[in-house]
Length: 320
Image (cartoon, rainbow, N blue to C red; front, top):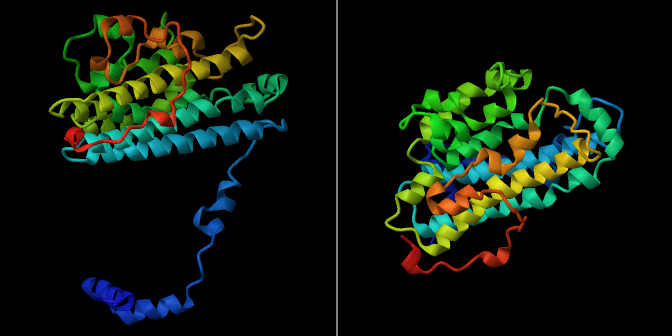
């Protein structure tokens, strides 16, 4: 049996390299540290407030944390898309992770209330116009990896549009444009214009790349969908498309309508209708919901966070 030194020599020789050069280099390499590996100093230097309000730093840090959670989710979804013929066990493992990450997002959102002074936030947020959380591109990339593009079109278009819309048609009527388009004039807000200028080409290319291989597609390719996977997918759909928007709505109501003011969001959207799931009717896995459940989507909502106790061991009978 080869010892560790022999294995290293074999590794570098197989690459056509001189093992002695690499081994001598190890003699002079500095030990790795936590702060260098995690890039702590860089990470902690990324908060650049636009005002002198102290809680603006909390606002920035929380959104940066959110983007890291979203990156974790996108990391899992990219693996699902790339996996050829995934087993049920594989998908259960990945969806469990997605549910955990989404639950972490939901559970942490109270920071937006407890971490900021009400009056200060309602003052400094005006400085952030026209920036908006609506412009989170990772949120959009996650959606594209989860479901068919047609499921992301606006609810009005789903009723009135063509039966087999192409990619361009779907993007023209994608649901999130409702937040940045004046329904009377069709004019796009600056928030939407800037977002599309930066990300629309990449989003359209991603939609083409993942077509037929989304999480929804991978589920449909299985010989059958056992309850263990079905329940997890339903949980993910509810967490991401009902619970997550509803915590946003609750916080928006706290800051924008606590006293009946109905203040405008920084992105200029009709935030009450944009955020509430009953209006958007966004679902990743519509085939897993009954007609009654679809009609009552987001109505009488209860924010039941995902619990780790929901995990079950997958036996060989579901690994297909």
